Image (cartoon, rainbow, N blue to C red; front, side, top):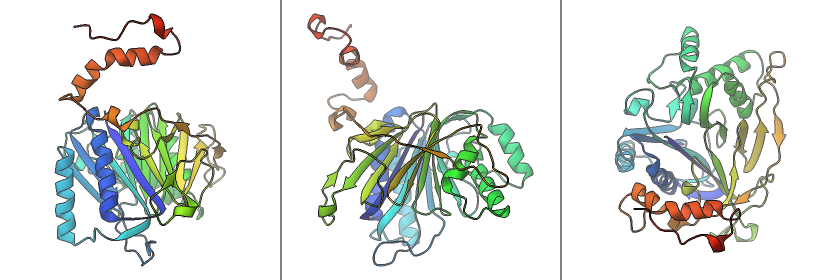
Length: 355
């Protein structure tokens, strides 16, 4: 069971070290799901003094077999060798991360995520799920000149995104949006999946979509009268944009709850586009294909955030040695919580272990 995580800061100045720590910690919160390798992607471009990007360069990818600590060591080793400035500030930055449990292809850096569209890392994807028609897609893409480096089903997704983008621009659609590209990719995918896309063609944007696999959005907005401080306000609605905020995407609430309790549970066939501080929710409709040579324009959806009924302590191991042991001992309480509101709590016996 893979885990995906993303962090986007908008008009909130964060240095590269802080961004890395957020991504690594997000992955640690997903460790209990099981994994054999992990990876992240961050931006490589230089910044001007304000922290805004000055040009769009291919993002950096770090992937490593083994545990999160192995990935962390590998990243900082690479950073030291390339003299990448960890104190470099970003007012806007989009990072993605992934823990992988091997299904297609052995545990190895090449099979870890993010998977890439090829040289230049034009499109990157982290994926939880299984693409059942990946072999057909792979054969088709190879006929169009794409070379594959991994043994995963996921690699077809970023390559398909590049194919869709290149095809649209070749046919004269110079204004094709990130969401249009992703919606067209979804049209060709069979299986269950939750995906997060990143592309240097669309700097500082992220796209998330799902079908049959869990995915949540967390929103934390900076108070306008306290922009120089660290105080944040949680949004009630997510239609506004332009305000300083931090946005989180995750397979699991455990990676979000320590940052914010305001979440959106993304529904099947929804596409969430994070752009310019706004959250745009679009609906995938399979019967909406191309309009002539142009990709179709998706319809938008208005959604409200909900409150996450969870504390940080609930995601820690606490007094237990392993997460499995914790889950076993918490089953009576979990069962009682599940039935709360449906049964009279006065007649329920005190939860106790059955062995």
